[in-house]
Length: 200
Image (cartoon, rainbow, N blue to C red; front, side, top):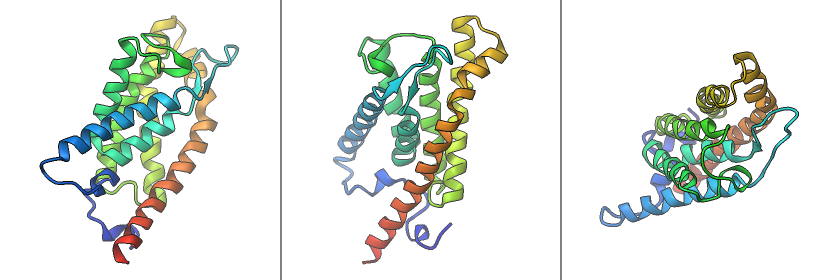
């Protein structure tokens, strides 16, 4: 852990730094959960599909989910992703490309919930405060998304396991690497700014 990040308690995430009292902490958390879900829904609209390659849309959402997880911590992140999932199933058109309900890529949305909770739990232990740890955190978060997304895609479409991997994971690896680098740079830099602000 860097000396900058060490100045903030390791059992905190960025959202815990928002000033509050015991009385209105629930209101803060409610706003954070709703905002996390809304940001996820908004980022899902930055999407496109290449049917010849994969039936799963290319989206910015995975980066949003991982950042929300790290910023909010496990409970709030899981609640935000649960809200996003539940509202989309109920008919709110904020899944990728303005869709809702259960589609072939719904497994990835279930994976968002798992990834948000996992990344949040690791971030709460200081996993988002150095570049190397954050990179590892993002890899695990992405794997959690694939762990749900690819099997669901296989079941929903009837494709083989090999085709599921070729169409449900491989096309996204380069984009995920770019998102990983962005997150690995952004999160530790944010913590460094927090530490600098607290010292000044």
